[in-house]
Image (spheres, rainbow, N blue to C red):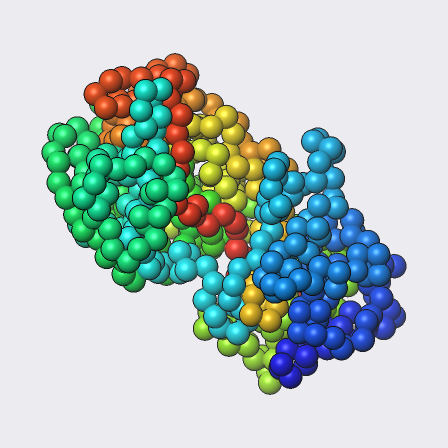
Length: 513
């Protein structure tokens, strides 16, 4: 408790620092006494952080009007979630006349969120992005063909129990724990809640039936689901499916291996499958973009991160309360001084990032991204950063991608980590307000009856057809359901299980010179 009070007091003192150090007359919240319950101090801290570091800080009312302690309830996590949601609903997007972070029929913000686990205290929060899993390692989709509901394996995490048991995407689940599968989200989730599960499945294409018993276990995940090469005359296409932008140390080995093979086979077109990729570490996106881009882009602007005015002009004293940590969650010390986020450079110039070629893949003619409504954040940043320089085409199972041109760095508050929108991203043409997402060029359907990398899977088939002919095929969105070819308009789908990470984390910061 004492440790928390000291931290909270530091935040409040920082917020009350003399105005003579400011170069503008930006309003700051009235300082409040560093007293109150543990939860009250956490609620104060969340508001005060937002008032200076939130991207749309200037839409927030003053402390007394907002009254952060009014959100205190019996559950700490729920109380902070409720307060964060309120914070995010003030700034209105003039294009929609609704808040930028509004989600219809939801009490959660579109971008900002809170996780259990305090990054500043070294508690791991975003497990998937660190490359660690602790589950069965698979997800499902329910397909309704108008007559019956069928259950398919949507994805299999590399390194997990399902992958070890040779289960693949596209397998149909016919029985769960020895009885015919009850194909409802509640029934499947209930079965997945146990430590073990027995599945009887039918393989795609061959129709082979087999049974596997899975036990939940910890594993190290490889975010590259698969990569392949396809040859059509002089057009050689590399295909890679990236599940998420996990920490670069986790993703780089498979990325390097894939692109080394692409270079060896003289790939001149590329299909990047990001249909389930909700983002992750910006450093990993940047590495991928440097693998894709030709060496002629070296030194050219890839993207910029734009922080709010207070941060850019050095008028956010609360940053002195956030320790600047290294990769091992230890506070960085420079010339005997313990560094904080106040020592970081938030200027536009200091946050402009440039291409620096990685790998040996030569120039390519087309980059086709397979996307969906779940393609977000760092995935969209990859699309946006390459658009000014390369022929980029989107094949999508939804009309638009998610729409998340903002990112954050984690802020530890008590035993939680807050990720609130703190910067926006733009490309070399200063284009970046894709809050509605990127519109697809070619429609497709997410063919969960086939594995990733199958050239007959609808999304990949559409991408390869474009590369082969240059034609934007918007018809033939079909999949084979239980032996019958069906148009996507004839079926409905529902993903079962927890969704993956959605966000853009920037942990690399340049220090002020």
